[in-house]
Length: 183
Image (tube, rainbow, N blue to C red; front, side):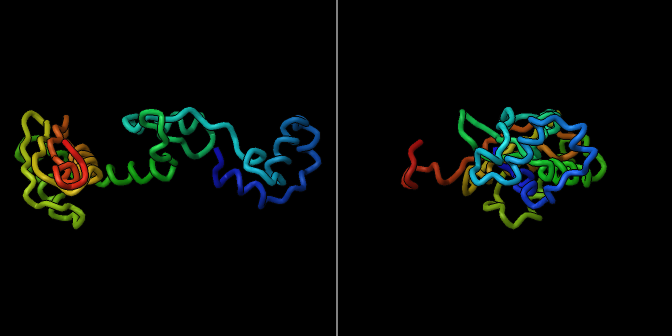
């Protein structure tokens, strides 16, 4: 994996203090030198850390990110790279969930909060989404524009305080017959 941190080493001053040369191991210093002056990705990159799955909890991902020491983790689904997860992504997620208001506990409050969030977002394609809740589980029905919107709306429900689960029955219009895809 090649990260911005790997490339930043090239910008650092390569002169080492005398005490560091005394206590550092030669192999480590040679590796640092390769990273600093390397001309190929293989000289600068570090081993790819173990990937995470898109459904990995943020807590688990944060632990793996810290263990990897790269600042970035690959996210794989079905063996294919679907994205990366960085410290910045984790901080953003924590900040967004930290801004939640007092916990909603009744099903009616969950539905009202979901409707309020839908109304605030301009990217929501269909204001006719049907929302219900039972025992803290939010159910979503309706047609939306694409799979990304379906995923985002499921995430929106998950970030409501008092949420216990989501049944995401939204259907992307792109999967309708005549749209280039079949059911």
